[in-house]
Length: 336
Image (cartoon, rainbow, N blue to C red; front, side, top):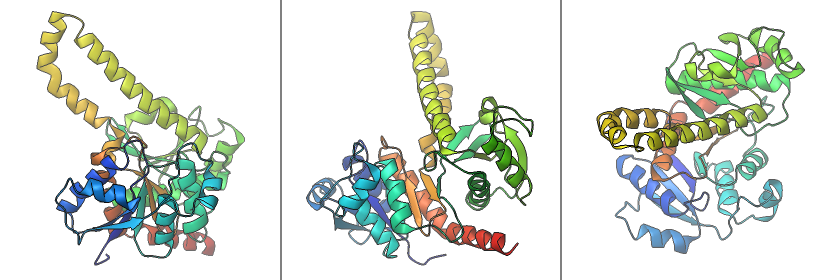
């Protein structure tokens, strides 16, 4: 475990930047002995910090004059906005001036920048975004959800292995169950990508239980859900929309009449608990697994609590040395 952990945060990325980003950092540093570097337009950051009492020993400011927006083309933005908060943060991570980097900014730019600047662990063919999804039994790691829209079978095998390492070390599940998203449970179902990936994962030493149909994802049958980013992103966005719309519908029905409103008073506690349980942001951000150092993507509409959760997730990742665990797994595969 590192004696001192230092995490850089993109203060300019996200819908509520820099206000909610800075608020989350201040809340986190009040309860944790971890240093955080806020990267962005220093005048804005200082003006926001003036609203809080905080330890100057725990929060540093790194000036970055440019911002990568969601409208920017990912690779072009990384190449041409060298002074952006995102690029400055990734370069700090590469230079080992910090142990992790968090951003709520442009996902495509973050993935491209992380791959180009930070670099992959030797043996890892593609890094993968891995958020946590709530299930009826707790949660499951979804990998990949946004880094590799076009994938190869070997990529999916590596995603399964990296996801297994993450869940084993961070969550403490000794033998994580791995499922491959497919249109049926039979081994010969699906397109060529998943059929070939099935064979590779089946022959590995992880706890692979086979194909997983989308309708069973939230039953908690597996701990790691493996798919390419095209499928994964659809699953993630569908989940976000469905959960939001379902709760909007429930709220509408519970306030539709006086009798419904009276009944809602008795059930409000239960509904709040269910809503919290199915809020994926409660679990922090999505690590980009397979990189030389930790890059964490948080949702674009993240608020202070989400930033706080992501920072805690980073600390756990670093303390459990996940990067070296993955690197060791890649070395073992090469030797076989």
